[in-house]
Every structure is written in C-alpha cells, then in structure tokens.
Length: 367
Image (tube, rainbow, N blue to C red; front, side, top):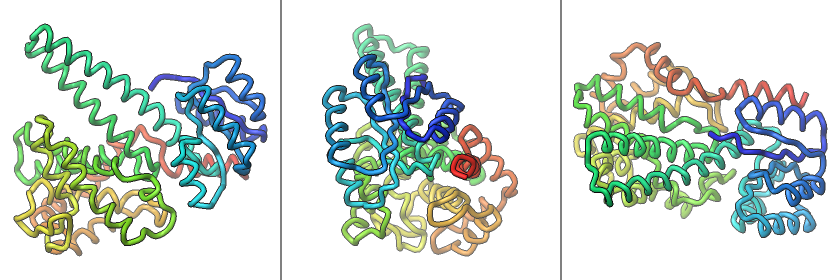
C-alpha cells in the first residue's frame, strides 16, 4: 500500500498525537491539524492530501455545508469523520448522499484503521485494474500467448481477486481477513478428503475467496445496520449467493468456483438457501466451505460476542453434524489436531492487527 498523505483534524492535542502515532506505525504518512478551518486552508493551498480524518462532535448545518464544498472542490478527496453520532437514520442519510465516505467511532481504533485502509485498497484496485486492462490489450494486439505471459496474467488475476475480497472484508473491521482464512481452511479440508488435483484445489480457493462477492450489491445501510434487520432487509441479504453467482458465471476462469458462491448457505439437512438442497445434492466443495466458514465465525471476534476457542468450535461443529454439516466433512475436520487448525489461522492472519491490540491502544488513548 502506498504512503499517501493523510491529514488528521482533532482539537484535542493528546488524541491528535496518539492517533497520528498509531496510524504512522501502520504505514500511513500522517500530518495533523488542530482545527477544521486550518485544515481546509492547508488543503486548498497545497492540495496534496488524498484523505482527511476529521473529528466532529456534531453534524451542524455549517459543518455539512463545508463538507459539501470540499467534495465539490476535490471529488477525489476521501473524508472520514470521527463522531459518536448514534442516530442510524442520519448516519445512513449522510453516507447515502455522499457527504462523507466513512463515519467511524473515535473510540474504535479498529474502525478508523479499517476505513482508511479500505480507501487505499480501493485506489490500489483501480490502479491494478488499469494495469490489467493494459496488459490484456497488449496481449491481444501482439497475439502473445506464451506460457510466460499467461503465468504473469494469472498472477495479476489472483492478486486482484485477493485484494478485491480484502477490500470487501474491510467494509467491517470485525471480519478483517475472513475470506483468506476460510479459503485456507477449505483447501486443507479438501486435501484431507482426498482432493489432490491442484486445479480443483485452486477452484476451491477462488470460490472461498469470492464466496461473499454478492454482498457488493447489498447496501451498507443493511449490512452495517446497528439494529435488527426487517423481514425485507433479511430477504435482500439472502439474495447475495445468487447475486454473487450472477456476477462470476460468465467469467471463464471462475465458472468452476461458482458452486461455493451459490451454495455456501445450503445446509446438509435441507434447511439452507437459496435452493434448499440437502445431503449429496449440495456440491462437495460447498459442503466443505460451510464447515470452514463456521470454524472461522466461531473463533473470530464479533460485535455481539467474544471469539471462542477451537475446542468450543469443535464441540459446536460435532453437535451440528448431520444437520448443518456433512458428517464426512466433520470427520475430516476432527481428524486434524486442533493446534494445527490454530496454526493455519495464525499464519493466515498474523500480519493483521489483533482485536486485543486495538482494544489496548484504545484504552491507553482514552484513559
């Protein structure tokens, strides 16, 4: 990720300096300002900041007008607001109308980090897409089909897939790294079940990485709704497997990964969606992924509960064998020592800030 400049606007000197140190340690190039007006002057005079993090106690009409003006002057400027505003309707309206790009709780360092990194990931994805399209045009015009060029394109393609899913994961810091973790779990389970073909294993990896691609069509107002979803909202959430499959079904390199995307919410007993398939009627790769997805969900922190141990995860998975999960896949999972599953998770997520580390930083900052 490039070290593009970030301007932090915070009146409180202690918070401003601590937030600057925290983000600098995570490879962001940080500058600070003590007031909104000073920050705006610096932006207009120098025009060198690609992102502003602004602490606002309220969304007054004056502040909203300034934000509107900033967006008009520099449409590419990313605005991240730090506010304890707890009015979902107003938050959704502000985001929907494009006044700001993210609203984060100033007490949640993880949310702030996620919002900033997500924006830079999106910019990197745009650059990668442009580079990828240029490569394709060059290959088409020069009719270059050598093994070397094909290998290079495959690497670009795989990197783009992983970065795309990382960006989607970063819509919510609580699920940071989820796609890569379940992809690795799925591959290991497939190998235990006797799947050795590298191409098949790669299809499983890609399907697992892209399992929630359909959520790109679900608005944040539903995905991040702080209260219980309505029936209609839940019905929209349940569309994401079909939406995701629709997005990738025409892509030649992904067709064989579509079973995971379309069927990852099916249950072995037939009570899942979107098709209500049961037992062997569910493709094996989707049955494998279902367990991998549950394993990561159980052992990861969520806003409504703490993460649970791999021992607890094993107990819950065994309890649901034959109902939610294929018994054969459960047996494959249980055949591998829990310490090895923990090691797989550690190796996949070790470069990400842990929830505990972010919580400790927050406590130091505000106590």
